[in-house]
Image 1 (spheres, rainbow, N blue to C red):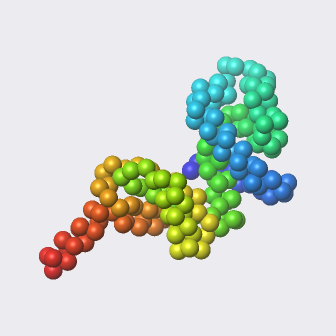
Image 2 (tube, one colour):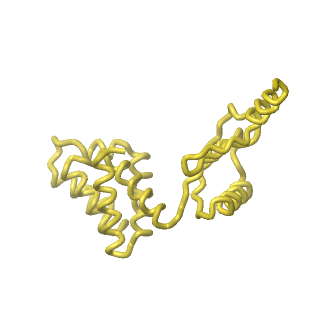
Image 3 (cartoon, helix red, strand yellow):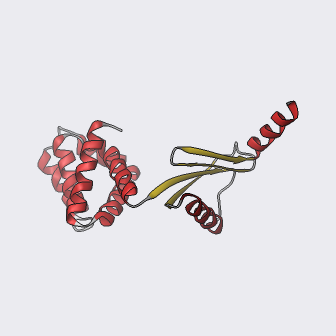
Length: 176
């Protein structure tokens, strides 16, 4: 995470607390991030100093004002004006980190050999919430190198319930 991301993400978080729109800003940052990922040329456009700043700010107004909270649209304008728009994702990540700390939310990444069904996702999420005592945002990743079972990363810890891990444990026991 960049220093710009930390500083500006924290500033936006404090502003959202002051204005009482933490959830709305979090959702807007997520949707803006999806837009920027889907259209990377848009960030290139906003970062191009050869394009007059008025034109770039006008494009932000046309794209975001009325669709996201004013504080988020203004934040994107500020990043553009300061030449920091490429740090948007770091800012968003810092905001999410602070938001999750405040709301006792943990991010869990579950790696499995196949896509989990909606029911499996819900069951896993419920088990993780019960085990951690926190709300869980679950992200799933298909990793075909996992023969069976699952690997879960949460709060900096790795829980390896993969078949490969179990076989390794059995082999180590046999060797003793």
